[in-house]
Image 1 (tube, rainbow, N blue to C red):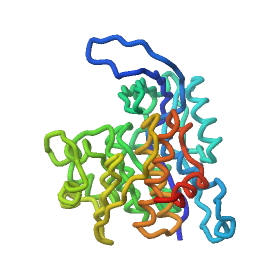
Image 2 (cartoon, one colour):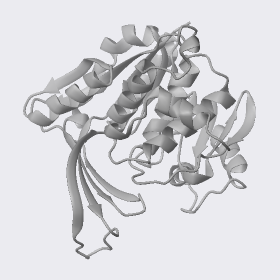
Image 3 (cartoon, rainbow, N blue to C red):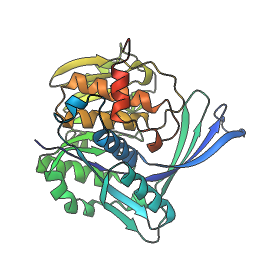
Length: 325
């Protein structure tokens, strides 16, 4: 049984401003707080997976029964202070970063994030060194892919590299999980190599060429089936406080969200993917893995930041065991 997770993707330094309300176009608002925090969808997923994989369970008797999951990160950062900060964050989460290249002459990727009082956000991403994560890097990752249970991907690095990684994962026997964000159209050939596609509402509709709109639990089954028809083996539609819906070889199922007070939704989707990958790598059934992922995302939105909001395994388990959960 393979027990490694390889996350290949973006590493950014997030510049986060807290505001009462998000600014409209042309509007200036006064911020209440400002922080710079390690981020990037790839690194967020890696840190969340690393934290959950290595942290102690509240069920001490079950700890020895779990397969030990090792998490690795692949991508590019600049040879600047921001890049060094991101590497330290990965190390603190127990993530191996031997496949993260430091690139001279280019800045580490960055994200400008506004977060309002309800936890909603707007994000502008500047790729920087992430744009240097080229398809030629894939050959050097094949050995890692041969040992992987899951390869986690996103769309903040060149699409050609994502495609090459999906192809290599299929050849080397690793399963793939693609978070199709930032939202963009994707070719059927790329989607056909994906084992689990995890779009949110906006991304799901865009992938099908449909107009933007809210996706509720009543819409999710049809949407998930339509997405599976264009290629991926399974689809999980992430619906925020409405939970998620799964359609795959095991059947179809909804998993409700956990009720928490949200402070910051940044990286909630990344934490969901990380939790899902960790649970599946440990051999949990899909229904149980979805519930674990929902709980991980719920804990993450109760605090500020991207990687700083990653929950421990014990926090996830306590929410899973809480009354009414």
